Length: 143
Image (cartoon, rainbow, N blue to C red; front, top):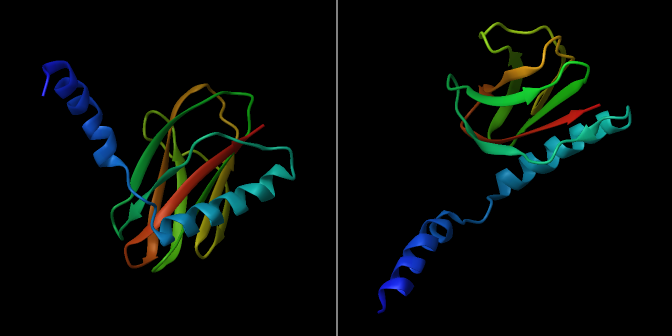
């Protein structure tokens, strides 16, 4: 095998290896999160491109960093699937202080809405509150 071809194959191998099909639970979590976020679109919120997916375990919250802008309003919509019974979402500023938000909680879905006073990095905490390890999906909307 010629060296340039070998180098090209080695360069794309990580991308090929990381590809995998979504599980049924991941698909369900995404569908439910998008459905919840759709309710906010009725109030003029636009869905932000991109989603965060993974798995949650009791006592092992995940933090997701987002850059937000003052003057905008945001809703973070979270859904769990599978053996999850209750999920939660909360928002923190860059110093780690929880920010006051408007909560929504309904079993496998949760949402937090707020308008930041200052632009900058924020952290969204997603966690499994009840149930066994399960898939989750987080999306957010803004206006």
